[in-house]
Length: 133
Image (cartoon, rainbow, N blue to C red; front, top):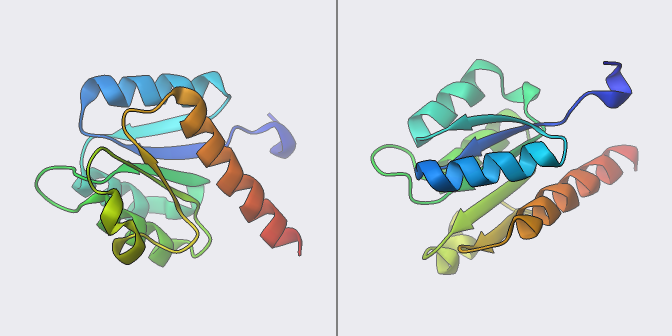
């Protein structure tokens, strides 16, 4: 693949195996390369290893023990200031204004795959425009 045709890489953080598989399939069907992990600890480890390889982060908020999705989003932005971040939640939307990183998108569960794809591509397009200006 040339640089222009390389797939965009998304770090997907979801602790529910069925939801993770569904989101992974949706993203892959749109041409994204997906690195899927099931915990905040795994996500932080991936970001600490090489955050620059990810073009976007898609994370659930409630991830059980360890870092929450809010924590993962903040770590991603510590590593890559312009990292697009999409949060997914069934019950934590009210905390987005105080816990989410700026210029992120939150989608409510349950959602259809088109909502996820739209959120990711919107942030990626905005990030590209910001780099060009």
